Image (cartoon, rainbow over the protein chains, first blue to last red):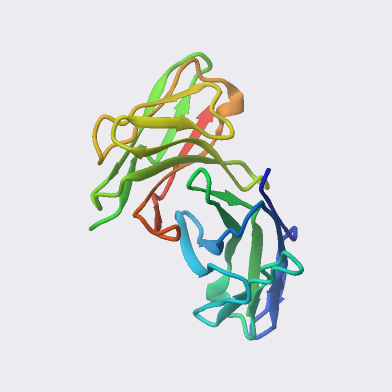
Length: 112
Length: 112
């Protein structure tokens, strides 16, 4: 079945450092890909999305490019802030059953 | 405020007890979902619904039941609670867009 694999955390960075969180997927067909963010004590929020190959999703300085040839959707940010500390989830849409399939999540901690 | 409302936010149950987790949305979304989040495991789909009167099992439905008598409400029932059901439960709804998910803030359940 469809699945998402993302790098294990926690990831600990200093403020203004470059961030990469790796995400790869296995899917039949052509799923849409997402990054969700979960701040402490809150539900998940959509961070960015890409609906077809070579699309680049971007939001709040975060970017990810849908790479069909490598089945990847890595999350990047050029300069992280303390306020970016959260858990980040990579996900794909199961088009047959109308549901999201999530990776295990990567906790990011940014210190001043 | 429009969104997904989950109650209660916290609950402790004894083994063998039953309870219902409430979920309500006021966005007139047809699609609704229940996920559980275990540490380091991402989110797993329990049940979902594509409209009032229609429900279907997700990846981990055992020990749970749902109903969808109205568009707004999608309660999750736990019968005979077990320690393995200790988790954080998220309800979500979606409009017609595959990326149009809105998540509730979660219910943290502990079974002792």
